Length: 120
Length: 107
Image (cartoon, rainbow over all chains, first blue to last red; front, side):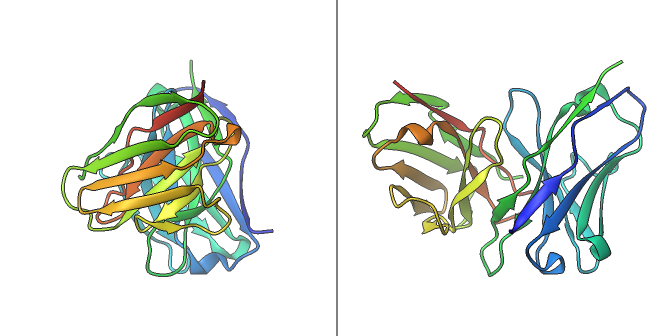
C-alpha cells in the first residue's frame, strides 16, 4: 500500500529538542519530494519546507528557516522534521506530504499527522 | 509571498445542494492551483490539481475552474461525507501558500 506513516504524538518542554518522522512505503522514496506542513490549533495549513530524498536538497519557507531542519534517510525511506530548541508556539499538528509525479506540483499523498505539544 | 484568500470562510448546505468555494490569489498563479479536502482527524486529500484536473479516485461531483488570480471549486451535489474544510494552494512560486480554508457543514 502506498502510504506515509508518521510517528506518534509528542509532549515536550520549551527548550527541548525533538525529531518526528515520516516513513514512506509502496513507492520509490527517492522519486518524490517530501514536504512538511504545519497546522496550528484552530488555524489553516502552512507549508514549511521540503526535501528531495534523492540528494537531500532542502528548501524552506523563510518563516521556518533556521528554526527547523528537514532531513531524509533514503536507506529506510524516511523523512524527518527536527527542532533543536522548541517553543510553546511550535504546538501544532505536523503533516508530511508527497509531491505528485509529473509536471503538476501538488501533494497527492499525506501522512495522518503528528501532534506536537510544547508546554512547561 | 503570494497570498491566497478563500470565500466564504464557512458555509452550511443541504444534501444535494451545489456548493461553490472561491479562491483569489494576490497575483497571478496562472493555473498552478490545487484544492484539498481535510476532514477532522484525517489526512488532507488532494481533490483538484492544475486548477481543473480531477485527482484519481475523487468523485466527479467535484470540479475546479479558473486561471490567473481567480479560481472556483464546485461540489455539484453535496453529500454527507463532504463535510470538511477545503483549502486552495498555489504552487506557482515558493512558498507554496494555502488559503485560510472554507469549512463546509451540513444543514
